[in-house]
Length: 295
Ligand SMILES: Cc1cc2nc3c(=O)[nH]c(=O)nc-3n(C[C@H](O)[C@H](O)[C@H](O)COP(=O)(O)OP(=O)(O)OC[C@H]3O[C@@H](n4cnc5c(N)ncnc54)[C@H](O)[C@@H]3O)c2cc1C
Image 1 (tube, rainbow, N blue to C red):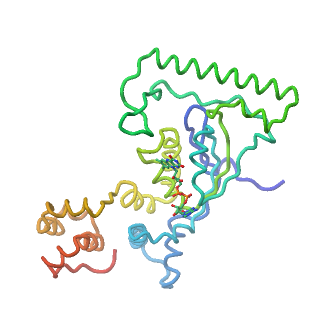
Image 2: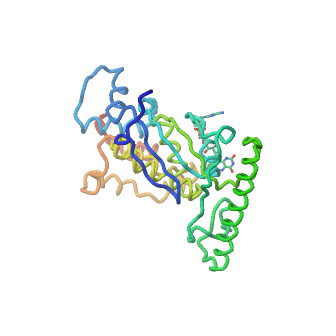
Image 3: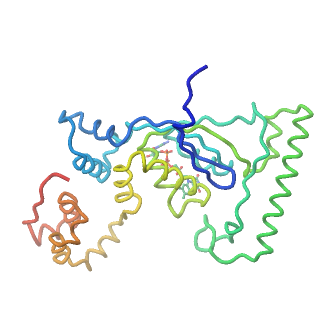
């Protein structure tokens, strides 16, 4: 028999009412990213602090290929409609449970009461926080329960009669649970998380995003910290937004912060790049801003 990942090495999180995400296998860590980034310089091992600085530099400058050196493999159990969103991500590999080959299981997603929400008026893809009357929630849950029972009963009966599984699956609603294996490198995984942990993504797939993040951050702590700082909670501005901001930002005051205790949140390299973002303003007002190269 082929060797498989042992139960001790698999890390798992329960998601939604019957789903899970399992980290089945992972090749590499923060060290592999640093090792790959340094290969061109041949500088050998550096201190942990310098490694962290390098990872932050790579993340900040979207120097992405070193992050591709880390490979992850996951086992996912999620509702069909979540899998449909998931599989829009193409820069990875999937292998899904086949409903042509295997029988569907009587496993459907039933949202918690608090998840039963109104359509959002402001966001056409989202749900509203407005309170939903109890009888609406009961109607939702009761109808879903009934539909799933009828659908599965039809499916099971036709399956017993020997009709083709590839066809009788048309009876099954999209809250049916499916399972798949998912292999993805760290760069593409962070891209997935950036999109799917975002408040604009649907709550159900976000729940998987947060569960993946919980398992991942322990394995690549320096990368996760940089990802949080620069991508996940960092902000981008359009040129028009930036133009407006630039008119109200007190550049001298900002520069003054560099020497203060508050300014310690940024390294010298980050300060230099931060001030450079002010472009002409920074050059015109002060050409003496010189901060060492190292990040
Ligand atoms: C909140 C949200 C709402 C969405 N709504 C919709 C919707 O209403 N309808 C809908 O159809 N989709 C929707 N999507 C899916 C979305 O458009 C993307 O298909 C999905 O997020 C995958 O992103 P990706 O292409 O960047 O990732 P991947 O497919 O993993 O690709 C990674 C990167 O590789 C490159 N790449 C991959 N394939 C190609 C290619 N063929 N050509 C050029 N570059 C490529 C791109 O740079 C891409 O960013 C939504 C996604 C989100 C997060």
